[in-house]
Length: 446
Ligand code: U2F
Figure 1 (cartoon, rainbow, N blue to C red):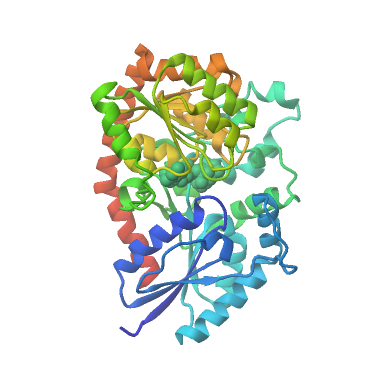
Figure 2 (figure 1 turned 180 degrees about the vertical axis):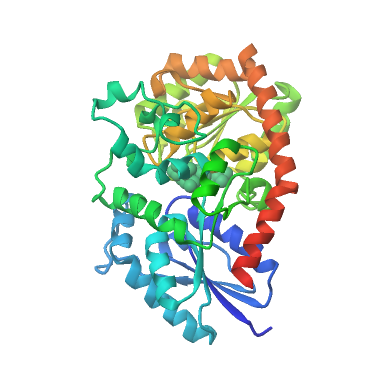
């Protein structure tokens, strides 16, 4: 079919962002076969992402003109951001020539709002922003200037006593020190600080802002954000429910499911701990070792998604109590009846996946992006998980947190609360999020 419209999609080339945006693009594309989607990302971030009939992946320059090997994700990102604007423009022009149609709409990862917003303005087309995390973190970024102006410079100890609801209407009483670092503490001229600050200034110009959350999960903050975005906030998540194949990688199974089946029949339902620290962070080696020892002490069976390079740890873990894989089909694992706890870095996708499968969490967040804030939501606001003592994995702290969630009374209460959230998320996914997706589709394709 000859396409009638040409839409550009620009994911942020880090962590799970490209895979998540591609799933959303697929859903938009499946509903609009006469629209051609050009998905623009760096060759590194594109990896082995698949193409579809009306979704084509086009590589964007990664800013690494020397072609040297860059292993550190932060450095890769710094290089990309330096030339992102020019490189995106160049690739969009090439895509227009190839497809034979001018780009008439831009779908931007919210983190690229500044560049994509400017490009769309030059092209005289509209754009939408996709925030792959939840409402609370986006609200925190939107209040960067208010918070920085309002808070006296009393240092971290004084800041721990100030809660964010003082400045952000509808926000839970979370200490401002737990907000994403860039909101209050980053130098706004540093690459990360600048990126997020400019996002907060540019994103209200988008035709709509879509979030990976649903309308009844973070209700009071949603109301605040909706008014900032002139009632164009769209809840199109949680993605594990609304984007059907999210995290459901059939190929990289590593026999996790049969292993869990075995445990269901031996150790029973909700007896296994699943462990993963996401795609962008890893605890230091000594913490991983402490966790391995803690698991031995608790005797809780575990399935651990651990990148291949942790050779020495694999040796400690090779005692039959657990299974270690380099990548797990996370959604299918969490959905399995044998799994009773999710040890997580509190990436937003992982939290949503835990909620929609009803598995309470043991949290070891990093001072990275919004993970500390996500942990506060999980532990203090929703009561569906517990942070490891002192925020770091120690043998005693990790053992006590895992035991609390898997077998303690508090774990049972967490399980009840998370099942209620699962019910709310399911209802939203079937109703309000479906309606909001319809609105997004209309804005993007008509
Ligand atoms: C950044 O987070 P990450 O990409 O590190 O973490 P998640 O948002 O939790 O996403 C990880 C995804 O990878 C999947 C898992 C999630 O969908 O199911 N996965 C898997 O399928 N198998 C594995 O063995 C391991 C992971 C950032 F660091 C966070 O702060 C943000 O919240 C997040 C979203 O913007 O992006």
